[in-house]
Image (cartoon, rainbow, N blue to C red; front, side, top):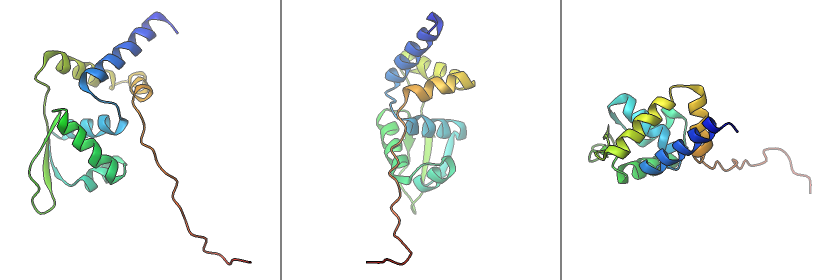
Length: 134
């Protein structure tokens, strides 16, 4: 691995750690909320829009709120407003800016994928719909 590539990997790891992000779903939800500034929707709708399970999105939203990266309104008729919060600390803010810039390019997105944990999808269990011979 070239020295520059190793520095990039270390930088990505340090920036993710500064933000507290560990899951790919957290990054994807944060990116969604950031791009939409304010979103009036449900976790189920966000899940459908970005292609995750509702439970995974709910966990990511909880984590991002605890990390101070998003803010949620109180639930009204099953819907909330989700807003992006820029980190107040200069180190966290610069980490977020660097990661957003990195994610603009394919090589940067691949680095992020390498450092973030993907959701664990359990295989769907289907019932045999055919005849049983026994």
